[in-house]
Length: 293
Image (cartoon, rainbow, N blue to C red; front, side, top):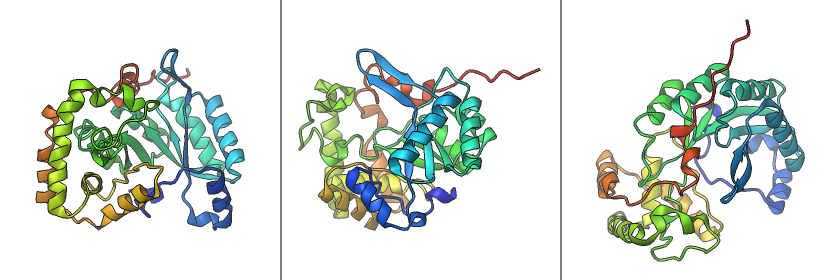
């Protein structure tokens, strides 16, 4: 696994004003700072715009460096793939930023196998960020083996299934302003069917002496040493609970039992809301780079 992902697996911290102040108090070399670029507009009515042009890449990193008040970013992700721009153009500018010392490592998010290979041929990719949880496992057949072939770290986002295995929409309500309100798996009959899966994990978690969220997170953690999940939360108690999931030591038999408890055939609803599915890795190829004669 690449150097940038070898230290701790989590927690990840989003930097607000207080976080930026704290960053200044710490030796820079002791902090691994990751941020991203790509999505320039997200509007459910007007659509989502992604920009991966070299000009935008450079403008984005320069702006991030100013806002963060740092000289370099450790891991810089392309957050979703710009399917109108050859990945070689995007990666070429990222490579130059590495050479200039403004970023150290390059990451991709929701990239297709072809895009990952082409990007990696321009400059080594350190990490690929993909949705991976007990109820979203579509990367296991192609993406995971490819990353391991190329030595790329895997960073699962939404490892708790958008909070579902933490009890969201089961024992906790979904905020009205949340994207989960339009997520197919959190709606109507789909949610009713999925709640049954939560109850199964809840029962299995009792066997392991942990919460359903901790068991679901431990399952992701045990997928390999090259896997670094990034569970998100705004509550300290949930942060502490997520960290405590590290104490769970699952055997291969345990992992299989957990996997078998959530059959993919029983998960109701698609993994992305309408209007967002085209942003997933299966639709993330880019135009071929034209060779100069």
